[in-house]
Length: 341
Image 1 (tube, rainbow, N blue to C red):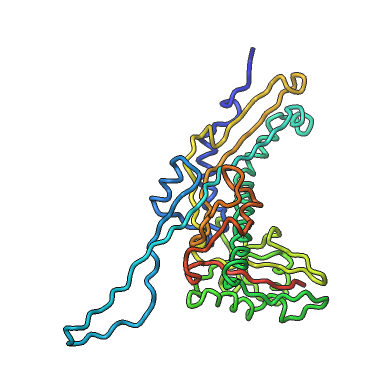
Image 2: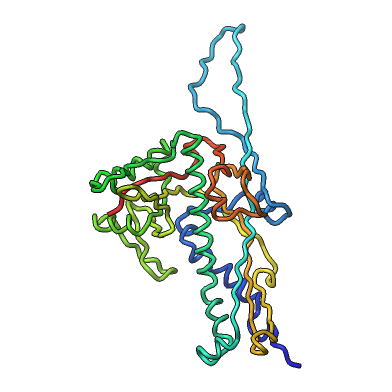
């Protein structure tokens, strides 16, 4: 009896190498500088067991005026103490699976392998979209925690729930600058902004978008005031009585720590053949996996409400799972709420 084997379809090592090359080139968050690799000690924990990564750190030295020396031998300077805190990240164990009946490929194009070929051609793009979805969810949770526990000091809003919003309620240079200002004297750290397409349209209508040709992505990338613009309709839109609230996220360089674990080739991409399915017509299943860290720096994952090994999209967006442990100025994130249209 002859059975189709993995080697007849694709070599996992080849596609794993392709994915590792493709991700840094096409990941718009990585290209903008939003994502940066964690220290080696954190990377080593990713490749070890467990689901949480502890990241202790020394607190920043408080900014204060120096003491003035004197010639009085009875006076001693009072040392300032050094304190430590702990950040914590959760590991993401993700998988995606695709399945097709062989007859579907034969009926569509005459080749049973065409469906899996289509999946493989778009697999890198698919994972990029998935990671972007989870990053936006994490931002939602981080800013929900900020609103609940830190006085919304990372959020600036010009939104009003009115039937006829004015220019003052929409995205503008002034609103953008004030959102950056929530970072204090680190406001110049912003390198990218993510917004809904409805907001992007109004910014474009104001002739505030510049397009920069990217040779590796083979397309023009929009920029606003020198910052890369990421347009994504998964950005939060909150329904209002008269008009919706559109949320934009501002990112500084290294706002998120990101690293992926080294997986065996047949774990990263695995095939399963079921030749008896479809009454003998055959079925092909493809499973692809990623293990990674995608962590907002300075925001502790509390693990308060996480049912599984890794958080779901909804759990990432839950304020209860986050707690800021760094000073606000050292968090390279800001939120801007506006009206659209």
